[in-house]
Amino acid sequence: MEPNQSPPSPKSFRRRGIYLLPNLFTTGALFFGFYAIVASMNDQFSAAAIAIFVAMMLDGLDGRVARFTNTQSEFGEQYDSLSDIVAFGVAPAIVVFNWDLDTFGKIGWVATFMYVAGTALRLARFNVQIDVVSKHYFIGLPCPSAAAVVAGFIWVVDRFALMNHFVGVFSAILIALLGLLMVSNFPYYSFKVLDVKGKVPFFVILLIVLVFTIIAIQPAIVLLSIFMLYALSGPVLWLWRLYKKSARKSANAT
Image (cartoon, rainbow, N blue to C red; front, side, top):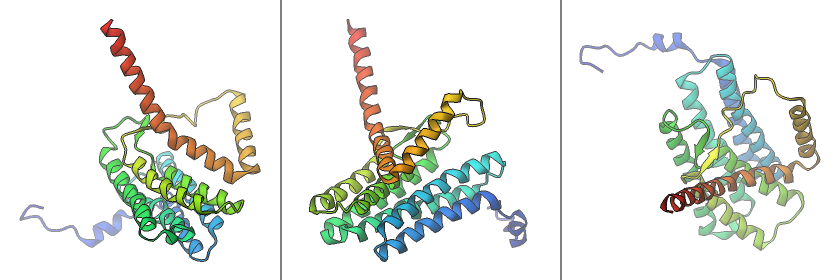
């Protein structure tokens, strides 16, 4: 601020206000992230996992609602990031820690901290790179997808009573790896360029109905499978690009 400039008055901030509709969805995502923490403290781990998925759906809607209604704002962007760190960083880490990783001592809380730190770093990098990276791909695993893997895994194990020592060890490795995937340079398809307002063939609607039907039959298994495959798609796509680049070099050399 220049020496002769006076600070903005509080009234000017009050007059600006904030957009209600998109921030309602963001607040909903924040609420369900917080609810997941409370549910895990009461040993309601399936409910906690479901709450994380609900938070994920609401988080996916707030930006789209803001764009459709032309109510984007810098406040909304910052609020969304703060909500994400709670709903998809702190909440999944505390849920999985209360679920089983607390029995691993230092290894348990170090693994969960790696996940929380990965979420925070992923969000910070996304915020500073939002205008310079391709809209077709994310750099690093998106934190809602990482949270979905954690929630889906807990939901499946809790739903089918599969808990044992091996599953506990695997969950510690899994959450640490997810933290690393979020800060990696692996490309992940963003789905941002899909035209939801355009016309599609009739079979696409049938396919969507089929997907919802399959999810309804076994939601825990299906959702875990979908997001686990998405988490693996980044390293697979990176290896595929590396292979194509190596093949082009070999072709040019000959």
